[in-house]
Image 1 (cartoon, rainbow, N blue to C red):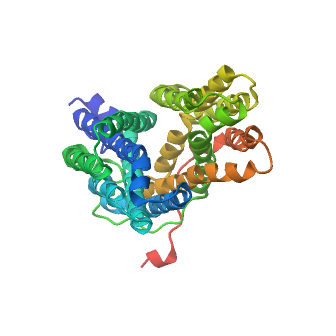
Image 2 (cartoon, rainbow, N blue to C red):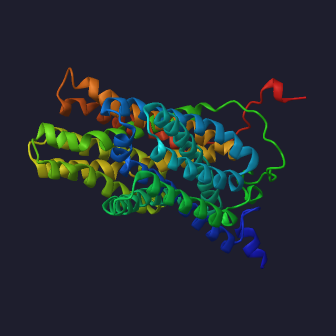
Image 3 (cartoon, rainbow, N blue to C red):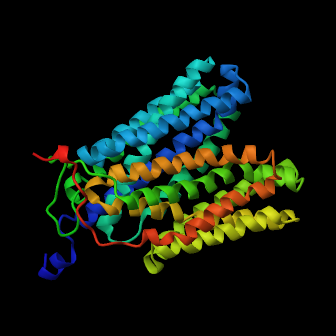
Length: 415
C-alpha cells in the first residue's frame, strides 16, 4: 500500500472489501426487519380471528407492541455501545425472528398481549442495533448511505405482503406461516453476522482519537441537548408517517367518497414515493447536505399534504399523498445518522433516544387524529402533521454538524 493510500484512509477504517461486506450485511438485516414486521401486519386479521377478540381490543393490545419496542430500544442502545453492534445485531435479529411466532400461537387476548409485548421488544432491539451499525458503516464510507438502508426496510415490507398473500391463499395458518418466516430469519441472522464490522473498526472511535473498542466500557455521559432536539424532530416526522399509514386511505374514502379500491391507492402512492425517495436521498444528501434534505423535504411534505387535504378531486389528492411521501422519505434517515455521528462512543444510546421518541410519534399520530375528528373534519385534522412538517423545516439547522466537545462525565463515573 502506498503512502498516499494510507493517508486517504481514516485510521481504523476497514479494508474496502470488508466494508462492502459490512454494508451488504446491514442491507440484509434491514430487509429482514421489514420482512418480519410486514409478515406480522399481513397476518393481523388471522391472528385477531384466532384469538377471538374485537377490533377495539386489538387496538389496545397493539399498544403493547409499541411499548415493547420502546423498552427494547432503550435497553439495547447502551448494550450496543458496550459490546458492539456485531454482537448485538445478530442476537436482536434472532430475538425478533423467534418472537414473531408467538402471535400466531396466541388463542386468547392475554396471550396475544404477552406475545405482542415480546415481539415489540425484539423489533425495538433490532431497530436500534442495526441503525447503530448503519451509522458505523456510513462513518467508514465517509459519505451518506443511511437512506438506502431504510429503503431496504420498505422493500422487505413489500416482499412480506407478496409472500403473506401467497401463504394465505394456500390456506396456511398463522403459526405455520410465521414459524417458517422465523426459521428464515434465524438463518439470515446467522449467515449475515460474520460480515458485520467489528467495534474496533471505528464505531467507537471518533476521527483522530484512539480507538476505544468493546474491551473498554464507555464512560457514563449525559445526553447532549442536540440529541433531544433530534429526538423531538424524529417524533414530529414519524408522527406524520404514522398518520399516512393509518389515515391516508380513510381520507379519500370519507372526505372524497372514493371507492374502497381507489382509496387504498392513497397509501400505495405514499409508500411508493417514500421507498423511491429513500433510494435517491443518499446522493442528494451527499450533494446538498442533511440540513437541506430535512428542510426542503419537510416543506415539500407539508405542501403535498395540504394539497391532499383540501383537494376536491381524487387524482389531486392521490398526487398530494405521493408528494407527502417523497418529501418525508429522506428526513428520518438524516436524523438517525446525525444522532449516531454526534458522539461515536455513545452512538447506540443516542440512536435509541431518537428512534424511541420517533416511534412514540408514529404511534401517537394516528391516535391523536381520531379524537381531533370529533371537533373538526378529517381534512382539517390533517393540518396537525402539516404543522409538524413546517416546524421541522424551520428547525432543520439542528442537523448542521457542530464542533465536537467532550460530554460532561457524571461524578459517579470518576475515580
